[in-house]
Image 1 (tube, rainbow, N blue to C red):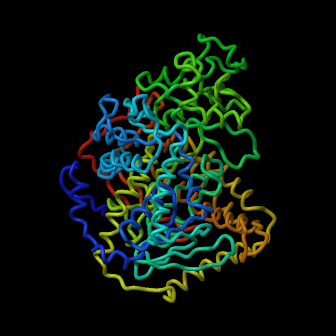
Image 2 (image 1 turned 90 degrees about the vertical axis):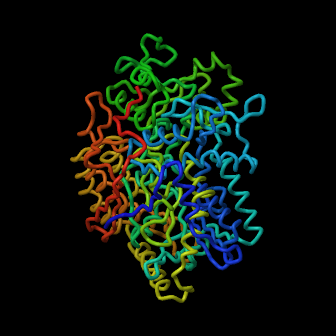
Image 3 (image 1 turned 120 degrees about the vertical axis):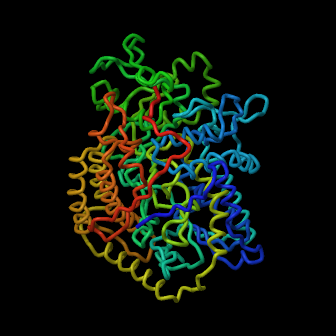
Length: 637
């Protein structure tokens, strides 16, 4: 099926302004006649719900947490990018655009990325007006720091709590609209199905997580801002509750899933400490501004770090990438950490760790300045490991973090399923094969504050769909599917929890489709995953009932979706016979071990069509055309 991204014509610098002018508008008096369902209260969902409410639409906003403030955007630490050029160090919209395209290994859509860079400056102004407490210089100007994949300082931050502060800004805007009556909020309510009527997304089926009641809500458009799917690997930096059910349900109803194999491994995670762990903890990439990454030069060197002299240390990122050093992009830094550990030079239990050392920064800047920049991160690390980064280097190792894949969307962030809009990490649109640090918050707020409010209105203004209510047969059918799925999960009566079976899936995914992938490992995964899925439906045990608070049932439904998504992820990785960004096929690498793209055959977005559980999905391709940036071998040396 041909995919039309509806990219506006004309010079790239004018596309967004031209598109906004061409979008149809809804009369202010008519906006209150339209109902928009927004699922998710993170930066994308919360900002979209608040802005759409402020415009005058009737908005229904859903989250499965007990408050919108607990959306996973809160966990982002290091900062948010914007092309303000406050430092006068050569930044610009064009440079942010180029860095993001290059950082994604030339696998992102140019028009979307340029728009992201273009509106980035507006995001900072919006958030400052909301009172977000960005760090400031002594004279009061907003401060910036550097992040991986850039040679300029464009990252605005609030200590190591940037995501939390930005989320509070969006939350207060959202609550203002709740008080005004334009937004109705539903907490502890999980979307379990998408309602499609005559080929258009018209509503959702939800479960009240406290009472277990299944109910439906219909409207004129549905917006998903529900985050990524990193927890398919079981261990990741995502919150334990983060899941893919909303986007997977939409995929099963016809929305294409794009580039699922583009999963990001973050280089600065606290290493795994035991089999009992249910998640991993991220240490912000911002720490690599002042921390130096190293391992012993010799394999098997078990000395404590303070006993290893400079002559016996390998600052391998500074050695391999002298231009970018410790701020090399995440995918590259992660693979190099894996390489030195595979050589036997890793540190800590099991040799799966490298040092992130602040000794030189403490000498240069002093403890007071360092604690002002990173104090809460130092405290977090000490609480988890029992080691004080003031005294000893941190130990870090790569872990699954962000997912660049997601539901396919066009330039207006609408999926191939009319009426279904997708923002933030839930869509695929802005990062290509690797996301640069501090770009997730930028995308979430760009989509929520500036893109979706304009493009959803255009869809509504074009009309052509009838008003419906919850008595519609499609609504009843969707509710029946949810009830049958719930009964199936409750009736298996096995002996294993969803968590145990999820861990088995995660082990396969990390081993066969993690930092390094091969044809053999992916073929193995595709043979094992169906067996594990059958085991899940044979050995799962969910206690209690569906008519009550039941977290085992919640988890079982989410893990069931992960088993299906895992298979698609491996299909995607197997058909992409190249390495690019976070997708590293060992067979395709340069002589010096870097990712080797194949632009002639794979410069496209892989958009997969669901054909049934266990059936081979259908691949649709959106060619990527580069008119403004020259394709080149990615280099940070």
